Length: 259
Ligand SMILES: Nc1ncnc2c1ncn2[C@@H]1O[C@H](COP(=O)(O)OP(=O)(O)OP(=O)(O)O)[C@@H](O)[C@H]1O
Ligand SMILES: [Mg+2]
Image 1 (cartoon, rainbow, N blue to C red):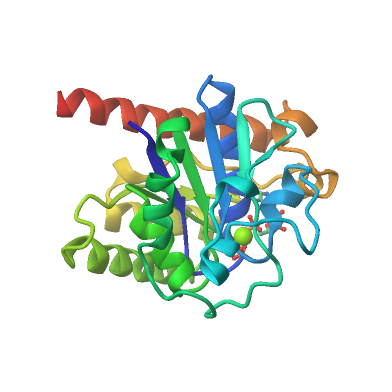
Image 2: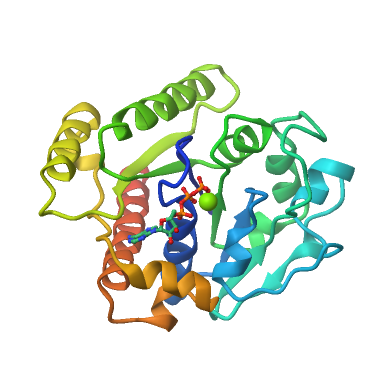
């Protein structure tokens, strides 16, 4: 069965896109067929994967603006096994359909849930219908966060949204896969303290191994390549490989438990 993972945090600049791109790439490297969907109209996933898009290129947002199918927007990426449904930077957040189940239905209806093993959703830093679509389409949520003093509030806000959706009867299967510290520097006391505090609140088991601060990450986006291609031996590349392994381990444990 397809695993659908939304990468989400309402706080801006918390490493959502970097994590969605690099975890999707590392999952594809393990032989899975992976689709990355960029719901954020900033459109940074296409940049990070060297996918050229134009003003009139089909995008995932055409589903929301005009009910268009997703398939014509599918694009291969520089990374084998990884496909992208790119964003439309001209789509105005808040416009178009307000149906929170649109993406869920389109993925099922168009057979994309059968064609891919894993679907990763990059989400915008806002609580709008695009984020709600991601959370209704996904079974799992991964929350990257920068461990500074406002991080706890961002994670708590998202946890409340997840709880509302999961307990609202619409989508009881939605679950928090884990929390992913990014831009982590263990020499910084606030980083260590924030990690402890969030770990205590949500459970240390939910904390994935941190992604260290690494300028190669920003450089790789500028170069239009996932880290594994741009700087495969860099700190963050190693950390994202471990993070993808943790995601797979969680799914494997889940399959064993449900047998
Ligand atoms: N581990 C890291 N080390 C250094 N810089 C990083 C790291 N992870 C992300 N960055 C940089 O931090 C910035 C924000 O990251 P990113 O775009 O992934 O966040 P985001 O949550 O997707 O932002 P937005 O809310 O705007 O969508 C980017 O410039 C990115 O290159
Ligand atoms: Mg982003």
